[in-house]
Length: 387
Image 1 (cartoon, rainbow, N blue to C red):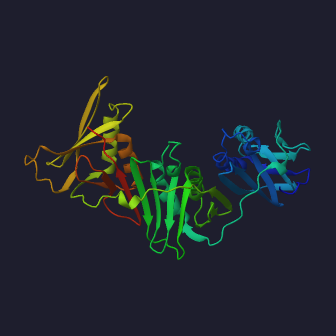
Image 2 (image 1 turned 135 degrees about the vertical axis):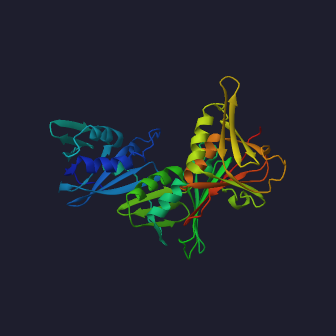
Image 3 (image 1 turned 180 degrees about the vertical axis):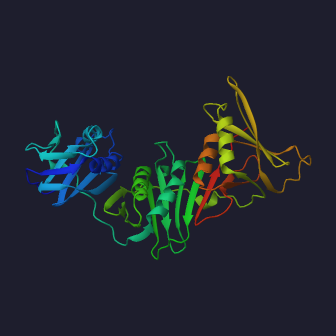
C-alpha cells in the first residue's frame, strides 16, 4: 500500500487548467466499475508549483501534471465525475482553492461557491505498475495519425476480446498498427519509424483513444515500451500505462488480397457524399449498399429497403484493369454489396483526395487505399455482403 499521506493539503489552481486535465482523466474512469475508489482522481503535490493527477480503471492508467500554487503539500482523492461537473460550471479565468478534509476528500471553493467533496483516504488508491525498460521514440503526430486511421475498425463485441484493441508492431522495417472486427480490417504503416529490438503489443481501444488526445497537443516524440503485461507511453509530462490484451490476433497478412486484377479510382469527397445520400434509403439493420461497376467508368450506388423505398446515384470513376466482359460499355462489369458504413469509415481514414478500390469478384474482399501513397501507408480491407 502507498505510504500514508500527510493531512492538510492545500492548493489553488486555475479553472481552465484543471478542466483541460479533467477532460483527459474522465476518459479513463469506467463508471460501470464496482470498485468505489476507482471513481476518484488522485491528486499529489510534486513541488510547490506542480500537481500530479492520476486516474485508473486498473486496465488503463493516466497520469498528467498541472501547474498550481501549492501552499501545503500532500495527497488527496476527490470524486472525478463530480469535480468535472463542478469545474464545467465555473468561470474559466477563476481559481479553485482545494483544502484537504481530515476524513478524506476536499473542500473546494471558487469565488462565492463552496463544495464539500467526500472521498476515500489516499492510501486506498491502487499503486501504479512499474516502468518498462527498452523504450523507443515515435513522433507523436505519426502515432496519432495511425490511431485515427485504424481505431474505427476495432470490434464493439465484448465477446471478441482479442479484437477489442489494436496490434502494434515495430521492428527494423517499420511501425505497424492493425485493427479488425472480423468483417473489415484497417492497417497503417510508417516505414520511417523503426526499432532494433522488435516490440509487439495488443493495446486496448480506451488507451488508444486517450493517446490520440494526448498526442494531438504534443509536438515532440512519445516514448513507447512494453513488457509481458503492460504498455507504457510517455507523452510530454503525461504517462499512460495500459494492460495488454491477451490472445491470438488474426494473421492480418493473409487477409490482404494478392490476385486483384481490377480497380477504380474516385474522388474521396464526392464518393463519401454520394454514399451518404444513398445510405439514407439502406436497410437499417444491414446498411447494405450495392455497387455496380460499369464499363463506361461509372459507379452506380443502389440502396433499398422493403418499407422505405430506393435510392440510386451514379458516380464518375477511373476504371482500370480487366473489364472486357461484358463488352457493352454501359453494362455492369461487377455488382458487389457492402455495409455502407464500412466503406464510409474506410474513405474517412485515408486522408487523401483520391481513393483506389481494388477488387476481383462479387465474393471476394476489396481493398481501399489512397490513390497516391504518403509517408504513412494506409490500407483497408472490407468483406462483401451477399446481394
